[in-house]
Amino acid sequence: MDVGSVEFQCADGYVLHGHCWKPDAADSAGMVVIAPATGVKAAYYHRYAAFLAAHGFTAVTFDYRGIGASRPAGKLPDARWYQWGLLDIDAVLGWALERAGAGTVQVVGHSFGGFGTTLAARSAHLSRMLTVGAQHAFWPDYHPAHRGGYWWRWHAFMPVAAVLRGHFPGRRLGWLEDLPRGVALDWARSRRDFTRAGGPADRAAMRAHLAAFTAPVLAIAATDDPYATRTAMARALAYCPNSASEIVQLDPAAYGLAEIGHFSLFHSRFEGTFWPDTLAWLVDGRNPWDR
Image (cartoon, rainbow, N blue to C red; front, side, top):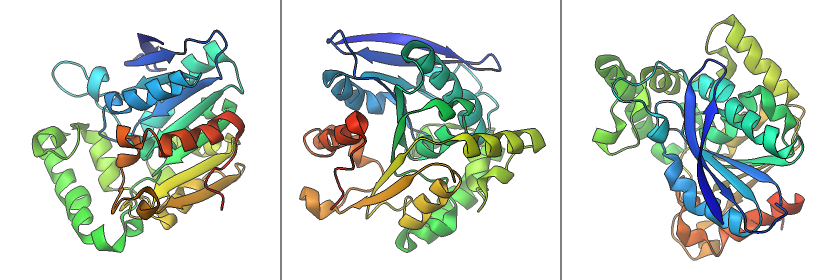
């Protein structure tokens, strides 16, 4: 397969960086954009992107502004969480659609990446989406066993640290990548209705894009995912009334494991189990977990 660095220019001029994996076969099975979780470098998804390319797909990864390869030297950019959808994901989708054509681009979205994709105007041209642990961190939706601890970490400590430091120092804490101040504060203040964030123009744009999103969605999460409970996933999917969707919760015991959690499904230990199952959805829209 061929792997190359790519750039994506956002509507406001910000340039994102990522990679594109091209399959060896002359005819691609289509293009898959992998939208990452908040505070996770695109590099974490490179193994899954290579897996997709080995099975005939052109796979695209990218970092949001302020993260990984899209982080400038010095101060982190002033960014809001919803802008990662309205501007960043939209720019990557535009790049992909320009090269693959409408109806042949799909998204695999992890955590906020699965929700943020539906905020992008160009998501209206997607053929299908697979989400893994997708939600927008409305804390009452967290799993009860983790709700108290995560409320303190993400909704009490994080906003204070972000205001004092000018960004959230997630890397120093060993929790995640550093986050732009606005992203950290939006996460900390995540509302029952996400589209109440931002100014009137941003709110109108988000609601219009969510209504225009019509691609079918298969929403996946492990039963022990502390963020993506069934309630949290259902809340995220409800923003898109014109999209047919289905929720599947995976039992760790089915994989011979005691736990999976929020991040593990993109680890290479799932290359022979979960990853091949995702191909059924990406190839022909079939839910392989439909029992």
